[in-house]
Length: 93
Image (tube, rainbow, N blue to C red; front, side, top):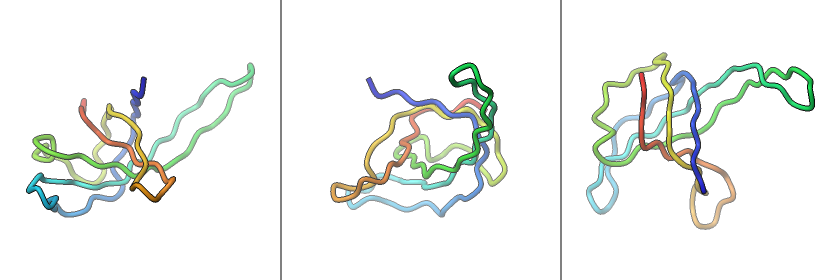
């Protein structure tokens, strides 16, 4: 199963573009801060992750600084890359 959820802030938002098949694509970076527990120790987590939305969800009213709960899945950025990108399929503002 590949389900991923992340609460964070949009820190970079690119302009809307289209795939060769005509699907709208919106790329962004999401910044996340939290305190997590690991091995009975407290750990501060600070990260940024590349994310993409494809299709109808690109029409969402999003702006820099928006804080949301993002849901989706993780995938390689391309066939020849091992970099991870977060594909967003649902947003809770």
